[in-house]
Length: 237
Image 1 (cartoon, helix red, strand yellow):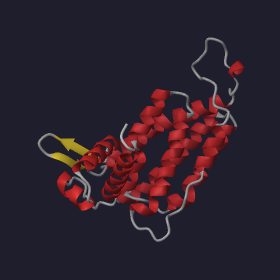
Image 2 (cartoon, helix red, strand yellow):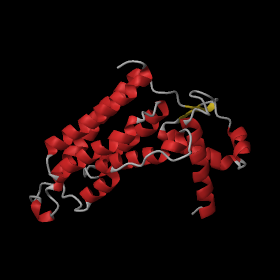
Image 3 (spheres, one colour):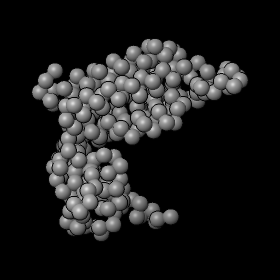
Image 4 (cartoon, one colour):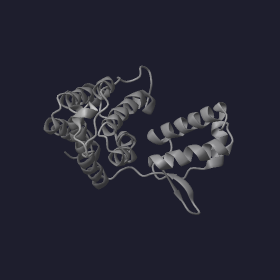
């Protein structure tokens, strides 16, 4: 095991570089010089390489043979639409399963030989409801630092929703999209602060009621509303 101090250093370097990419301090498409970045951060190149490997998994940087790491380009309008379409497919399915499972919290409620929709964790709805409320902007912070807590909490809610679908492959597919990093690197609509939490709570209410149709509709409405909030970045509605 690596010492705790090393782990903390790597996490700190990862967070710093991620903020630079999110704030376009490292411009989209720009080459990332590991040695120069290590000097800037006053660390050895090793934690920088480790951080860049994590950012590559996030989709925020790319590694190319003979070139090294570059910051990923921003989403195009077509890629943005494809991301929304994929989320509509995956996250509405997750919500339906979570709502179905909410009515089957006891193992005895699951018919023998029918594991298609396993019983839910009885605390699932409580976990989702606690995660549904989102923090506001960080006072006196600028750029990504002001919205980092919001984006982390928003991602946590959607990951929990995927987790409580009971389907690990579905969960993994949703998490791998990393939509929050990509969308909020494009544009952060201030209206997210006022509306996303309320939309989350409507999703939880439907799941708590054990209503798959309503849960699916609530997720669809949330994702389409978020889509509309981001469209001004592209200059069209």
